[in-house]
Image 1 (tube, helix red, strand yellow):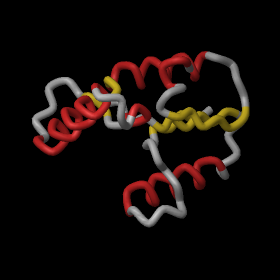
Image 2: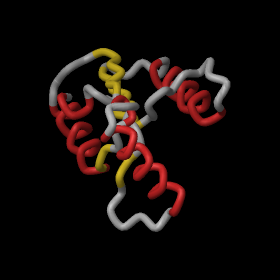
Image 3: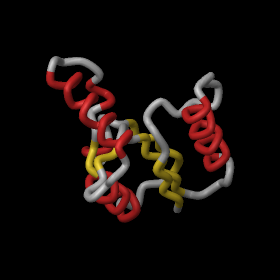
Image 4: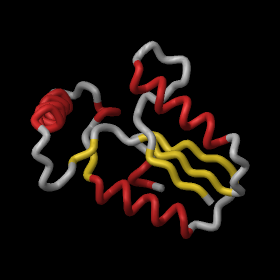
Length: 108
């Protein structure tokens, strides 16, 4: 079993370096042949105690957009929520490759 934390928008054909790199990693991991492979594609992560200015500004801006109904798929998510989903998936007994997008992570 393999559980990977990727990123929202991951796409190996993207013109944006970060999402292209994450997409290439997603593609490569899927080819490894694990009986169960879960790829989580969360939005920006809210990390307790983070002192990264750009990260804080990004999360603040996304929350502001979300408050007026924009960019809902990019709603920042606490790292604890992603970790809990990873544990649930690892214990689920499910097989095959599953890509879990940002809105499905909390339900996984």
